[in-house]
Length: 341
Ligand SMILES: NC(=O)c1ccc[n+]([C@@H]2O[C@H](COP(=O)([O-])OP(=O)(O)OC[C@H]3O[C@@H](n4cnc5c(N)ncnc54)[C@H](OP(=O)(O)O)[C@@H]3O)[C@@H](O)[C@H]2O)c1
Image (tube, rainbow, N blue to C red; front, top):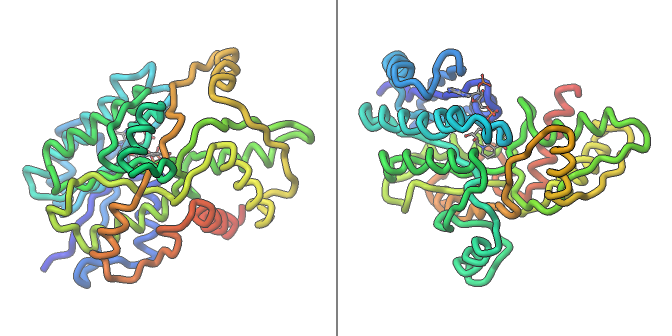
């Protein structure tokens, strides 16, 4: 039997790097056979280009494709809708079509920003959850994206599910951070480290979500691939995020608390809370128009947790996989400190 071949798109993304790192660390395999990973950068594979996809598939002959490529610039997408849709909607559609032709399985990543968190949506969610409002959106909650980014991500996941049905694994995740690339945790650490004495850091307190360590997501994906979900476990749409929820403001406070404890920072910076409207007005005064973001987009991962617990019997290699977001943050910051930052 040949080695299972895995094609990663968007090789420079946080997620692709985490997939490569966690595989090297944990050595996940399929039936004892190591995965052969082909991570292609944007320059090597443009997922919005049919020919580029056909050439990559001919070369790699993937058994699995993990689509880590995306247009993630939420604010810029408002002015660049064509490109956002090309990458976030057409790209997944073309990948799914090629997977359908070749028999490859596809893991596609979507976003909590398909929800708006507007009162009606949250109320419907509460109903779905038998009155429990605070455990996050489940998969069949009705999406209502507010931004071009959210709309393009929703169109992408819908295209994948339409073409591949339950053979696809579409995972909505949220507020991703890790040691690589650009993310909220690294931005906060940089701003906190460089803030002049007495300067306030102002962070939004009326958007609630689920911070997620990208390495935990990467472990989850390898476990799914190492013990592929039997087609017909339900829909191919799943949620995965760090457990619990918080505002960006609470997230920033916790980053600072843990970073001080790990000596990644040597002084505390005062952090003040601001609401989204005031924050957007301040940004606009500086010439930056912000895209609307959900007021509530925490994700409930119970469906995937139940399936994976039943399906995957190997060693997890990631004790934080189902942990509270604060424990995932601790694991990331410890890795970051170990890198000598
Ligand atoms: N980051 C978050 O907070 C977050 C939250 C929810 C969901 N997600 C989803 O999680 C997934 C992984 O996100 P991430 O944060 O790891 O991504 P990321 O770090 O922002 O990287 C995205 C990558 O996609 C590449 N790319 C852009 N257009 C492409 C194209 N046409 N063809 C091929 N590659 C292209 C980019 O390359 P260039 O830079 O060279 O263009 C970049 O390397 C994405 O689906 C994202 O939407 C992320």
